[in-house]
Every structure is written in structure tokens, then in C-alpha cells.
Amino acid sequence: MAVDQNMDSSPNVAVDLKNDLIPQLKSIGSNQSKFGSLGLLIVTVILFFSAGIISIKWQDILILIGVLFFHELGHLAAMKLLKYNDVKMFFIPFVGAAVSGKNRNETAAKSCIVSLMGPFPGIIAGIALYILFTLTKNYYVFKAAQMMLLLNALNFLPIMPLDGGRYIDVLFINRKYFRFFFALMGAAIFFLLAALAKDIIIGLLGVVTLYIAFANFKLHGISNDLKSEGITAASVDELMENESAMQVVVDKLKDRYPRLFTPKLIYQGIYNQLTAIVDTIKFVPAKVLSKIVLLAMYLVMVSVSVIAAFSLIAINYREVPRVERIDGKQIVIVERHTFGKKNNECPINDDLYYHGKGKVFGMNGLLSADTFYYENGYRTGEWIIFGNSGNPIEKRTYNRGQLLSLSKLEGGNWKTTAYKDLSFLRRCAEDIQQLSQPFKSNHRQFVN
Image (cartoon, rainbow, N blue to C red; front, side, top):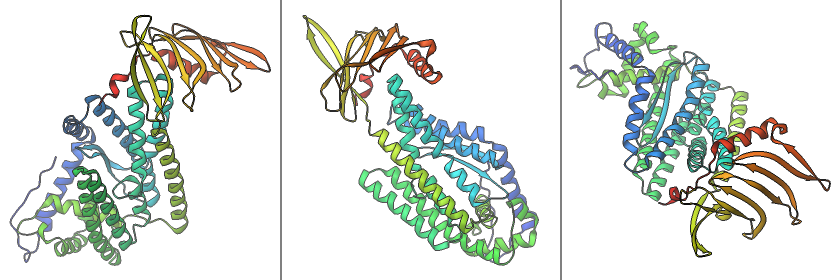
């Protein structure tokens, strides 16, 4: 990775573009490209893991890394499809992960698609994980679904620098004061949350957002000046090829960011500012109709995603053990709670596998007539589901975890279908059930 290089200079002395600044900046750009996304990802994943392992279970850290990786993979895939260059993925210790990339023909539509393709696939994956959890009752599938939904739903919110905030910022990129106050609002929200939660990490996000607000405000002014003077470039390299245009940009940077030039030239800082300026002046803002369509699309997606995410997270699955003495023998029974209420319960053996007759409880907390059986963690025997009338309406027959037949009451008669004759999707669901067996109690995972 490139390292800042400095040399003595004076604000009153002209910068030697041809023999000093431009060669140094080209070297920085070349070294950054050579570093590559894989190396950056590996290093930052290690840093993220090391930073988080001190406060959370290592299993949860691995799930979180997987969730963040999937989220950023969506951004990365969108950038690749839209022909972005120099695409890199990296993790930020204590904070999260990010993907960076450049596009010679940046537009509002492209940028909005990239923003959406992180949280939206994550929401879909989270819902899929919840469906998988209902089939497997696996604690880690449950945790992955929770993290996937919560992280992506939060990222959809219109707060800078989250994906939703960047989406809105892009739509109004030519509105200098709107962008400034919108970013300030995001910083204020993070500071308020940090105070309420007493969490310094959230406070640091507020500081970052505040820096973004003022940095973008300054750069917006420089970019507008350059556009009015007819100076454009598709990349920093292209700008550096035009020495007269480069001189104008450097003079404006010296005026707005004197510390980058005195008492020493900070090449990396100058390169970063040039990159931000070029990204702004080459950006094509959305037209009115496109802006309305993109805004409507965002509102629909964020509404559906947030409602779905927080509805499913409200399931709040828990396993609670209790001990009973039956016929002089001590039996451990595990209660499975959803939505804060007991949904069903089943005995477990010494190896924590479900073993014996289970009981089902309705939404009112009363015992229902439904019955099910496990033997050493495998579904076994006849599972019966009763209707509101109190009569059986469905029967499933299992042998060591494998569904043999499904019987449904239709028109007063039982219709039995063998496993091989079930629909493709139903067979897939049953196959997942079978692969996940034997079922083992997760109650020890829920102990804080």
C-alpha cells in the first residue's frame, strides 16, 4: 500500500507539477491499484475478527463476517456488472465493511443500483434463512437470519453514510446545501444514539459523518467552479495529462486545503482530494423523471424491507429448559418460545437430542391436540395436526427422520401421498428437514 511522502514546500512557492507532484501522484495511483481487492480483504477481515473477538462469541463473529461479506458482495457484483474499475472490498474494525470502485461514466442510476444491491439481496437472504430456521430450528441459522435482516434493514435507512443515506445523497448531488444539512442530520442521529446507548463506536460514526458533511461541502464548491470553467476529467490520470487544468485544480486545493501543501506536500491527501473532485465533476445527476422513479423505488424497497425485517426479528426464538420428575426419573423438557410465548415443548435425552412425545401450544398459550415424536433427535412415528374443530386434518408418517407419507383430510376422506409423489418444492423442504436431523436442543446457546 502507498505511504504518504512529504517534501518541504511553501505556500508562496509554486508546486512543480511536471517534475514532482504529478509523478508522485501517478506512483500513488499505480501502487493502490496493484494492492488488489483480495489482499485488502484478507488483511481487513483479520483486523475485524481481532477487534471483535474480545467482546462477542467467536461463532457470532464468524456469522457477522459472513453477513457483512454477503452484503458487500452485492455491492461488488453490481460494480462489476456496471463496469466499475479498481473494485476493492475491505472490513473496518469495530464498524463494518465496505467496497470501493471507480467508473468513468458515473451516473445517478448506476450509483443508486450499487447502493441498493447491498441491503436488498441481504434482506432476501435473511428471509430465506428464517424459512430455513423454521425447518431446522438451528440456533446459528437463527442468529445468521437475525444479523442478516437487522444489518441490511438498518443500512436501508436514509442516514448518511449508510447505503440508504448515500442513495438519497446521490439523487440530490447537485444540491449543495441539501447534501450538507442531510449529512449533518445523519451525524446528529448517530450522536443521539451514541448518548442513549453509551456506545463510543456509534459516536465515531457520527464523527465520520460530520467529517463527510464538511468535506463534501468544500469539494462541492471546488467542483462547481471547475465545471463553470469547463474543466472535466473521467479519471485522475486523465486530469493529470492536462497540465493547465491540473494547475487550476491544484491552485484551488491550495486555497481550500493549505495544510496539504504547507509546510510539506502531503501527496496521499492531495491524491484523495483529486479523486473526490474528479468523481464529482464527472458525475451525471438524475433527471427529474429518473429522480422520481428512483425515489419511489427506494421508498417501496425500504418500507417492505424494514417491515419484513423487524417483523421476523420479533420472533425472538428462545429455548428454555425445565426439569420434571416422572415415575421417579428426572426428565429435562425444553420449551421453544416464539414471539415471547411458548410454542411447543419436547423432552431431551442426556445427549441433548429431542427424545419422546412433544406438545404444541396455541397462540393463547393453551395446550393443543397436535402431537409429534422424536427418537434420539429424529422425527419418528405419526405426527398429527388438529384443526379448529378438534379433529385431525393432517398426518405425517416418519421413519428415522425421513417422511414416508403425507395424509390430508379432504371432503371427509383421507388422501395419502407418498414422499416420492409430493411436489418438488415440498420434497426440497423435507430433504432439508432430513439433512438437518438429528435435532439437538440449543438451549445452552441462549444462556448469556
